[in-house]
Length: 89
Image (cartoon, rainbow, N blue to C red; front, side, top):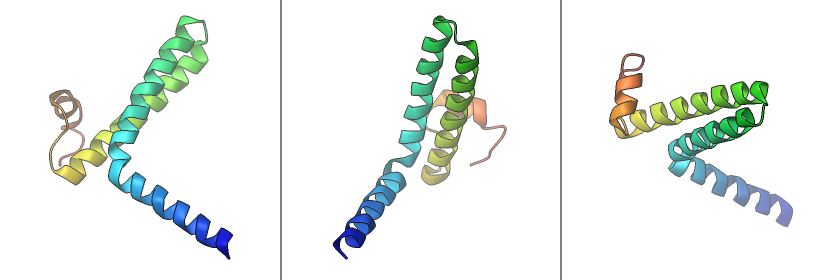
């Protein structure tokens, strides 16, 4: 029974963290994947680089749109300029 309660508590904490910091975590993870892609590309891993750049861009866009929907405004001017045509807040 204590294992079940521990798992339930862990899920509740992770859910709260994702609810509270989800947009920021997505955007930071996207930027981290861009850096990882750059590192792979500089060492000759162009397939990994392409995959990581696409994944990083997708995460950044999801985090930015999530932030804009939650707050009602874009987090930065570059985000508003790049994404305003595609998704109206």
